[in-house]
Image 1 (cartoon, rainbow, N blue to C red):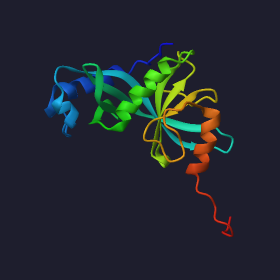
Image 2 (tube, one colour):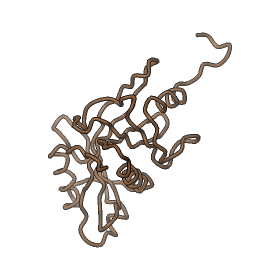
Image 3 (cartoon, one colour):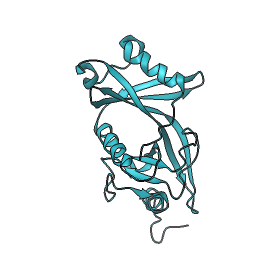
Length: 194
């Protein structure tokens, strides 16, 4: 089933295109893969990046939109990614980067395309575990920049995943969030004051 990729804000896409076309337009150097790229590079698959700030005891998650991530494609594969962030002046380019999350994201997206149900892909970051997941939202018509993970949405941990959590194995939010909550929340030592 095809994925329903939400449209990125036009200023976010423009900021990435400007950074790609003008190395002097950004402060940071391009990644080695971008410097070695033969042929044109294009930003594709804009994914909203949400951050999981906390999960309540009732299992309700508090997330916030942190930016938009674009895979940078050269030929038939992604060689890097570009991130944008919201500033007081609007959407702005943040950085280029590469590494294992690029190939892991591509793999998880290909995996999601084979599922019988359509989904809206997003990214969900869990900073307390240094974890990134592909968040497959069931409401394909939803605003990709808003909302919280529904109990029936899927989370696909990207590699490298934290110890004990299998990368590329889809989990329902209702199953995975309690595990993440337990792992992120420090446990009280026996005998320590409440």
